[in-house]
Amino acid sequence: MGRKVKITVTESRCRSGFHRKGDEFIIDETICPPMCVELWHYAYPYVWNLLNGGVDDTPEGRKATYTDVVCPDQQRVKLHIEVIEDKKD
Image (cartoon, rainbow, N blue to C red; front, side, top):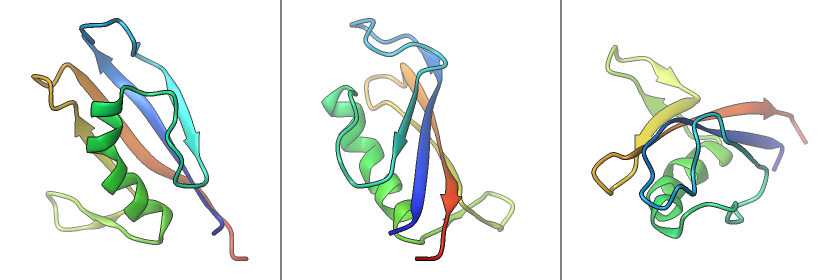
């Protein structure tokens, strides 16, 4: 595959205290990191897109290799998801 994606928790008011601001997860395959299943379920399509060469449209109309997502539980946790490595295999 070649790409790696980093997920960073940028804000957290997690009900269970499971996620803390500054937590990071490196994904180089589509496996579930130690993350709340509801949050992973929401973030996974964005991670998969970036891992597989996709880009995200920014509000300014640019193509970006990052995106920001929020927890479906009242936006209690915010994530920044970005490509950190893109090697040609």
